[in-house]
Image (tube, rainbow over the protein chains, first blue to last red):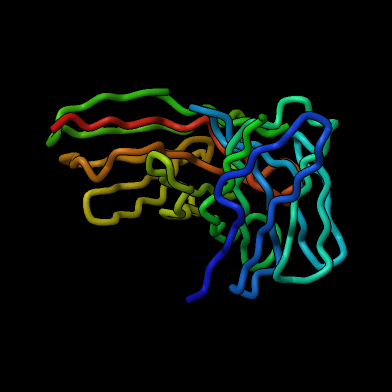
Length: 114
Length: 111
């Protein structure tokens, strides 16, 4: 079954701690994205990657970091610098570049502060 | 940067009533996509519109792209409880690289 797998489904972060959210896709998609969604709100772009070993900041990149060492994987680290990390994090991928292809989303990770 | 507005923010309808949500941009769009997110779920792609005045149908859903390519609508005929969720439009940003999502319209359907 092709798709996007995000893990864990729920994650709790302690003060001053970095946490990493996993995103893996087996759709052979070039582009991958991370979004943040707050309750009752739309999606805001954190980081995106159009190709392996390259990624760009989105609208709200501060306090987050990513890597794209493999085409299939695009992990997101929420650092201690992100003071309000509680949100629903969605990973997505699309075939090709330039926002002309549909995005496929994972089931998301809900992050909370302990 | 690119911004899109969606109206209404919320809509409560009785099952069987029709529903319409609108997506508006101040700039001309190259394309527009629509997504549906069920409560507790993730967004799911519904459709993409590219041509001026384009109309596409998916069963009870009708999607339209405005003639000036600055707005779009999603119309649901005879809503069902399975239509509950938030409907988002998404457009390309000013650099043509990424998607900008509208704030969404949350639909509730009362049985």
